[in-house]
Image (tube, rainbow, N blue to C red; front, top):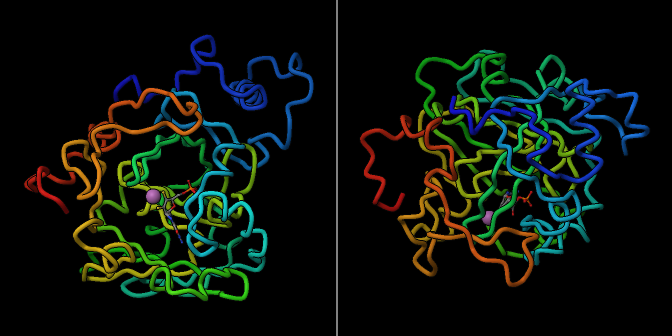
Length: 309
Ligand SMILES: Nc1nc2c(c(=O)[nH]1)N[C@H]1C(S)=C(S)[C@@H](COP(=O)(O)O)O[C@H]1N2
Ligand SMILES: [Mo]
């Protein structure tokens, strides 16, 4: 693991939100008594620990992360999810795990999360639309869940589905996408330690607009792979159909690895706009695999990365 990914807790180098800093200091045990009232429940209350996989880049604010979203079940505007996702009922919540697994079943959210090691993962997040954020997720490794349910020999892919509930997700009454929203990963991608099931961000349980109560986060792929509000996980031996790929295969591949050298047919992927940087902020170069090359490049040995997948 390269040092730049280490969460080396060098507080003088970064100036995140006060509440965030307070909590991180609490986590590090750096004089909790001196802090006087960190805002909100401490991350420790969620049982989460910091991770070596976190970037030391400054995270976007909670406000930015929860007000600029893509969640088409609630409309296609960036502000629509924050406005409409309140309608979503997340308790009770059941995730069906089926296909090539030893222990298929309907798992309640509590069943699913109990026994998992929650970690804080501060990841870069790069949308295919060429904007980016840094998000302090809380979650557990998908590999831990897959190992718990027992992946059978011959399984090669993991397929995911979002809830369909048009009474609460108003835009599902419109043919914007083919519902349910679907995504998928190759099994080795799903098993990579960077791949997490996120159940919160900052000190909070996952906000509804960000995919409550549980969503996927795959930080080296374009954001559309990180499917929200998951109700189904299936192990299969065939590449599963995925929403954006079905809609427009020439623009959205199954792999969708962040790659500054392969442009979207309608725009460049060489640079990105950091959300929160202001209207006139300079664009920054996009990194191969969104900066996670060292961790994931080996998954794609033999694939021609100059090609569009
Ligand atoms: N179910 C569902 N999941 C989804 C989407 C969606 O519309 N519906 N949008 C995707 C896209 S394009 C992006 S960029 C991210 C945005 O996540 P965020 O709003 O938490 O930043 O969610 C992804 N997951
Ligand atoms: Mo996206």
